[in-house]
Image (cartoon, rainbow, N blue to C red):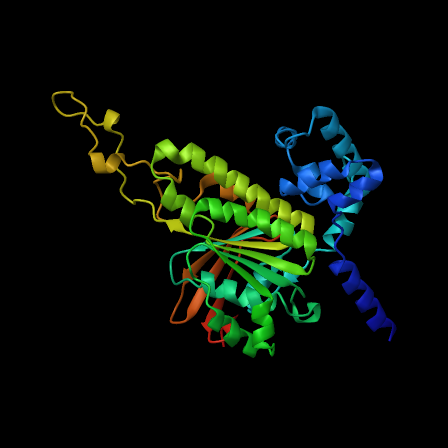
Length: 365
């Protein structure tokens, strides 16, 4: 009986959301008009205020330097966040991290228990490696109880490629013994056709999360498709990467502020195994530089090296630094797939084999 009570208390502690809404700033002397301006700018929590650069706060109409200073000071007081935290405090916060099962114990093991809340996990690979199937499985497992490896929360699904299939959610829900209709009702999907819609979805998501704290997972399927299609060539690379950085920063803020597991799918590029040599180093007998053919002068907008046979995730260093955990997915035999942890601050490089079944991602029998 005592153990059950302790488990219940631990569950309540884990699920307790510590974010503070900006409305609480009224008690610190912040005017209601200024609070409404923050909400109009899609800033709904005090933690988000602290994570927003000062120059962006100053761009909000009517917010002056003096008001920014007062806002930041008030937010620090109501959240109890000091400029530095001790390692012991960080350890206590880490206990609130929830790991959502992928449906495969082998895959969960190399991820340290499943998909981690409070950070971004990236899965990348070629087509038919199980990326979207894994996302559909997470739509269901995120709703399972903590004792089942779930997150006891709803899911936000940002669909940029039209891959979401409600029928798959029904099939996977049946496997885990969940009501299919109720499970689907807890998955909020937004189909995006432009990168502007995709970026706006993250701001809308933060508004939903601030209003309803019972969400566990945000899925972006996929993160680069629209950026890749709309920004072509090296001339647009800088603009694309700046927008992508802002998009990912919004996802990181949502993950940290609301203890959400953010999962992004990424595409890959296959480097040319025989790249053309530098034309300035190639000389013809008459010492005239051989020009590179026009088709070989195409810019690599993803900034990836053209050397080495391994598939590379697109998006360059912007995505590499935003993703806490990076996992490469590869095809195996038949319905088997291989996951390889490429980067993680807490887990070593490792691989696991899983299977795609009618009930979603599962272990190999």
